[in-house]
Amino acid sequence: GEGREDSVQSYRIWSPWYVKRDCGRVVVFDTTLRDGEQTPGVAFGARDKVEIASALEEAGVDIIEAGFPAVSEEEMDAVAQVASTVSRSEVAALARCNTGDIERAINSGASLVHVFIATSDTHMHYKLRMNRDQVISRIRDSVERCSSSGIGTMFSPEDATRSDREFLFRAIATAVEAGARWINIPDTVGVMFPSSMFEMVREVHSAFSTDLSVHCHNDFGLATANTLFGIAAGARQMQVTVNGIGERAGNASLEECVLGAEAFLGCRTGIRKDRLYDLSRLVAEKSGVPVQPNRAIVGQNSFSHEAGIHVHGVINEPSTYEAFDPAIVGRRREVVFGKHSGINAVIWAFRNRGMEIDEEEARAVLRSIKASGGRITEDEVVERFESAR
Ligand code: KIV
Ligand code: ZN
Image (tube, rainbow, N blue to C red; front, side):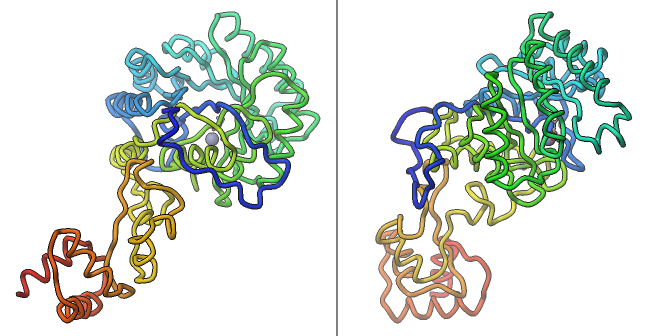
């Protein structure tokens, strides 16, 4: 977890003055089981939720958002099962700002109730059909209801990033006064840019002493960047999902945010990074959402080298073409063969297995690799040669 030997190396290249060097301990709030489950076509049963929650706990996630109990009896039961299984991580349950949702969340066994209501004009007008004063009184009543029951409360002004600034501050002030433990800033439709996220979080952070969290969606592919800039600006918690699954283009991904926070911001988390790959496989399997091959950290190709020049470099010194050691995230370097392979890689693959081949043989193997195309593994190269002998 927080040991040093498994730390990803620090990259501070061309880093501007306003990005702090030590952002301290960051709280990882995983919402794979709630926002991640909102991925089209994904539905986790109680058993899946318990299995994933146990893996999240093993991986060192601080807070697991287990679900949205108002959705159904089954969902409420699933949250309750997660809450009774998990002991080291805190368990959160989502609720809208209404009494029914809040009672169910409180009774689900979760120790943190995450209440949300939209604060942007668009959402208040077209979705809630409520005016500003009505929204404020819902926030006050809802957060007070949770706080008075003794449960931890997190408040999210949904669509915060598109909300009127003054009204957003009024909404947050209301939640703070009513006793919220955390204020979460959701970029609900993923419309932020890293420098804007920095500015927004910095302003909210300087106006309120309550701990802040950020929750970024990936509609422009910037969810991880926006999350990290939110942390750089003073947020203490990041809300993420495994593999970045979630509505539309998804959420900020746990694995990217954890590595990025460590490499660029000098943060610590409680995450056991060597569990990240297994966690990714588990969520891909249970959700049925495959991981794209070139995805950072958990993609099939993220530590594969094919080009002759790259393989040559990596064989001599891995840091030539690797940003960090794959073992840190529970993976292994892989040399694959294809159109761009070179003779050195072929010879090296055989040596790795204690076999010698001469240059002529190696050239023949290389020709056959180039002729067949595709992604050929080290083992397949050796097998091919042996069967052709
Ligand atoms: O994206 C969002 O606004 C949410 C809230 C419920 C926090 O998921
Ligand atoms: Zn969300």
